[in-house]
Image (cartoon, rainbow, N blue to C red; front, side):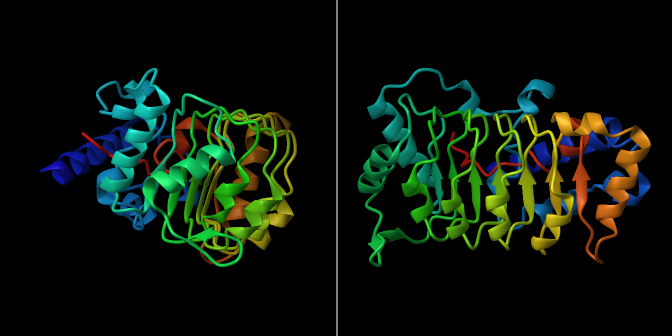
Length: 279
């Protein structure tokens, strides 16, 4: 029943997007042909219950049920209990550290590792099996070094954490496919992620990025979606130049790279975050 409910929400959101957001897009990007099948393909490695958890849609679609958005002040103990609940719900693959009541550092990460009974392996104390971590909305001075010991991460959400830079340690995440870092204070493209060759999706929307190393994107052979809306770099382009840049990137290989430069283009693709769903 829950799956049916969430798939219905996805269908409604997709149809709404097609009706309102896809008009006027460049034909060559193919985004006007966005369909539930394409959305399913984008999220094929994600839990079915999470396809409806689209970050940012609470502002636009008021009827979307986002339990996490309603969570206000929690004690640290309550927060730990919630983390465990979400972790158990995802059968130990997803670690939701969103909205921690204290600054998240390596000590907090170690507390959670102990709480969940996660097993460390190797001399470096690496942690296997966890595929997704979200720190969205947390208070971070920097990304805790312990985060990069989750060696099997496929997705990481660092959105709205106030980050100004990305640590070089992110290079250790060789299986990383989804990198969400929107709503921060990055003033340049985080070239550290160029070492993550499995990346298919990058969200850098709502940052302070003024320039972009377009040529270096070739170092990410699997990159499919790049979301850069609400960055100063876009002010350097006329509408025609931006269209040409989109077509240029799309034509770079047979698979194509979708450059997404507006909320309408990116809402369903780049803001898809895999946050465990719990009633």
